[in-house]
Picture: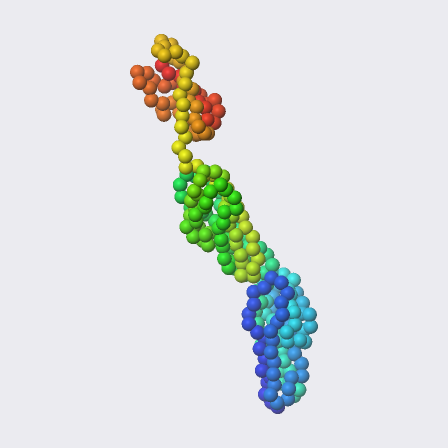
Length: 239
């Protein structure tokens, strides 16, 4: 027998827990004398349950790319080797759902996901909490869109799964407010009055920002000093 054995180390794998190798070896003439699994390359330690068994279990001590070699020797001393690759990844992906926001119209989601070892297999946006329905443009894209059916505070979750099945998520808070605030004007002055200036109170139905005296229209007069009482209440002097 001068012919080397036939050896198959099996298909390449992406794993995050110990698994069974699927090696094969055969020799039609002299028969197989021995098989042996070894680490050919890789960043960490490779532990075989029994390196002489074709279908032994194997695990790695550190994330990275490994080459495993299966050598078979026949009873005539001929040998042959085959290799297979294992991407070992026990680390969760990195996920960012973006910054919290307050909005009143369809928004763009600015998520991101990465995995240095196995790569990202899938991403998915879901509603974690909130009073209404959330409609995503495409929930599988990190940069998608979202729109809510009712005012309120929502928590949106971006989940990423890598090719080794490690999974993690990040969340973003969206305050959805599609309701236009109302305002009530009041003053302690009688009607009519000859006081000048006199104070008018602006009471909004919710907290507002960016309001100033230029937003107050006065017939036969003008708006002067503008003060903030609270997030939803302001005063202006009318002359």
